[in-house]
Length: 355
Image 1: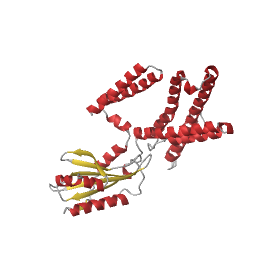
Image 2: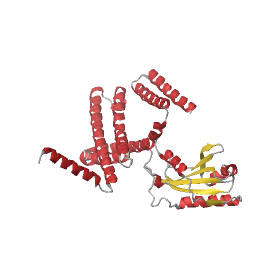
Image 3: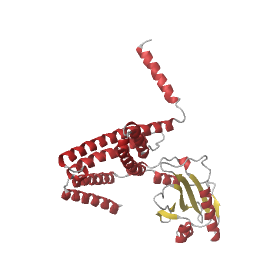
Image 4: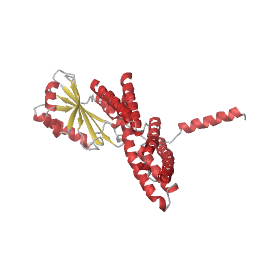
């Protein structure tokens, strides 16, 4: 058998393995990526810790002071620390974007893997327990912040089938229904807030979250639109269960959970008390609302691709100005640093004003 024939057989075997991969392949790949990112991050943390200890020993011996009381070392500390901080972010972005299901690979999980790796293989002696504790606290805190950055940038993993939808047909024109649904009493009792309004065309509502976990748990969106008949309105409803990194899977697309059923029942009761008939609409016109919900849950990276070039350039210029300004301040160039940060603030405020 020739070499070419052997290579051809090997290629066919590889193709067969790829086609016949198990159904839990995405979950297995996700676990491998989390572990791989954690090990790489552990190496970065170990290098930083070793460098910090060497520099601290040098400063202590040469200048008889602690490293944190030695301003000349601040630029190097900030630079090296920033590099270590962005390592999990970079791998989280790369792994999440290339995952078959676009499932988030959280930096916090990488940090936990790193802590375990360092504890069992590096800092496993009694004399190094305090250093390990200090690293664990810093790594865990950094992981929480990094998770927030990744979720904000990439959004949560979401599929349309995991969003429940329903439609109500209201026997009244849109203006009368709008007047009822925009009262403070209606919004407060049902925990809603207006998120988007188009005069005479549509009105969108969203559950009013509270606290730092306001974007976690049951989320309900409503949309008021004109009906197909002159004196008819449609209320579209979409709901989902937001988790930390994604949207909870549902067994059946047409299933409606208890929270949504309760909201629908209270809506019907509300309109009945105002002598208005509200019935279930079998047509289910909530597709446009579902698209809006997906846009809300998706991250900044998706919206940036849809932005005009000018706005993208302003964002990049603002980010560069902030980084350069902080760097100049770290190196003691306060005049240039403050001027650069002022430029960044101007770019941000100008963008907000134009928006």
